Amino acid sequence: MSTLRLATWNVEWFSYLFDARDGLLADGEPSRRHKTTRQDQADAIAYVLERLDADLVMIIEAPNTGHTQRTTRALETFARTYDLRQTAALIGYANNTHQEIAALYDPTRVTLEHKPLESPGAPRFDGDFELDVDVDAQPETHSFSKPPLELELKAPALAAPLHLIGVHAKSKSPGKTADPQEAITKSIANRRKQLAQCVWLRRRIDDMLDAGLPTLVMGDLNDGPGLDGYEKLFGRSSIEVVLGDPATPDRQLYDPHAQAWLNPRQGWTLSTARFYHRDYQRYVNALLDYIMVSADVLATYRPRWRIWHPFDEPRLYRDAALRDALLTASDHFPVTIDLHDG
Image (cartoon, rainbow, N blue to C red; front, side):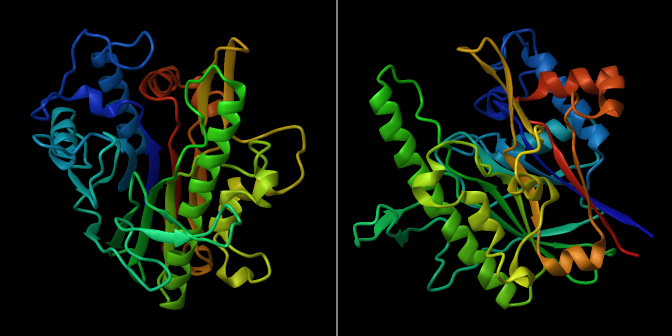
């Protein structure tokens, strides 16, 4: 029996570890991470990637592609510098945010192809999408600031190619504002945009299921059921939209961590991200990162998920080197899925 390991990881400020020509800035200067040098952050990212030992990592907030920069060149430079086995990188549609979505992978284990789809109900992710989300009977035009990355993955261990969608959905945060009413207005507007993006994503998923394509959705969806009060205005969370209708379970996606959130609160929560809250003067946790799979993937490969949160898993906490690297590298923690071929 062989195992294929896939991961998703939002690496905070990864872009700022590279110069204008994608040279790695692993030095003593401050990184964008709080009280962390660029050397320390780069070393921590590399150590985590090595310990994850994934055949493919969907990097959310990957280094920039722009006038002189190339995401793939930066990631492959990083891999060479640290002698990682994930030596190849691939992106789809570049964006203007300095936060690309990219796959870093081991080309001796998997073959990847950027394979974007489109249909009348779900145009290409670098285009526009019409949907009425403010209930005025007039559809609004929506777009992705970070278009999802659609990939076809082939590997000897797989019965058929897998179709991956790497996602970084719109944040609901209102940003910095001192006006409470302005914060409410921005939060509601951002949730509308996020909901539209997730409806668009779900329509693509439906197209893929109709075509019989084994599907995985991986990345930072910036949402979880019950995560904020504005969800009541829209009836359901964006996560529930992406997972699909419970009335048709064969067309639903599955992620055990999302399922835990869908159940009534038991007094505990799962989390994939850790942020410092200035008002509370403490760290708070959130479940934002997911790997959702279609029913055929669930049935065929008996997947096993893991959130690499150093304070929530005793094995990780006891491993001081890995624990410290996870805390230094990013404010999000990786999520992995192991697919078994026998």
